[in-house]
Image (cartoon, rainbow, N blue to C red; front, side, top):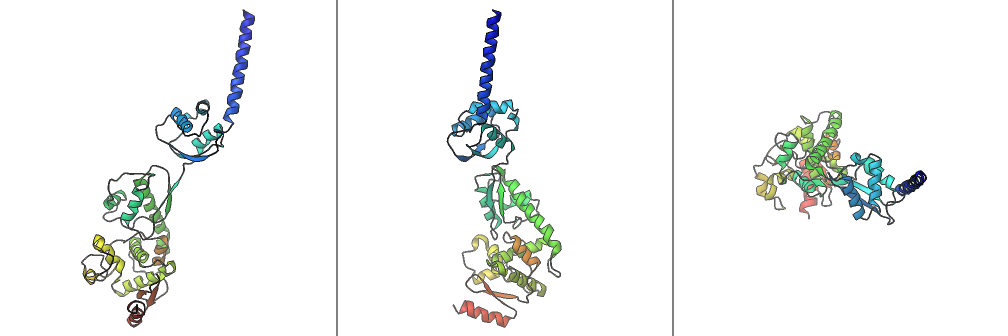
Length: 330
């Protein structure tokens, strides 16, 4: 009996050794025979078993129990995180575990375009399927409260391409875009040119938003900025159509009419001197830099030439001639 017991123990040992060797070799073999790369979304609260099942049902892991056992034996179960992760079936089970534990989540781009309004920016954010919705409606007052801005949050996000994790909240995104603007102003405002007619960095952002809407030609930004600065210094109304359009809001029908120029809106820079009360759009870093370092120009007038660029003039006579050439002549 003793000898039989010894034999059984020896056989069991051989079997266990064989199983261990098989398991060890499996953990270092590709997770699937079908080559593919894809993104897997692991939802918060999913158990290890649930993750293994999800990977198997997605056709990414041939032997889910191998992955399951490896994670438990490695004591990595509590280190698996929710999120979106890239998975390559050429990985081994060991590499899969390492990637899911250590790799950063997949990042998705959201682009806020310079010149868009805050409402338009909110629409882009809220329609992105990777963003976790927090606000039921597109209400700019929610953003003002979120960013602790007393009244209007227009223009308080820096247009750029941001990369986010899946399920990033609206609040997190808006705070990040606002922080980017805050950091930009903290760097550039102290380095501004001397003698600018801006009381603070906020006024510079307001002016930059007007520059953004006035030209789509990057090289013209410093010239548009110079015209705005020159008008402010001379006490001449800005008389810039984009501010009027912003003030009209939904009443704007695609054309500025004579009656629109006498609209009482505080954004009507034909009737009111100085800057509009808030930005009228999201201003790019380039437009902000332009108003902080305007061109060395005495121009106070400019007219569209019809090709996207403008003709700049110092005197009213020059401006009228440019209007006749580029506007009335057509």
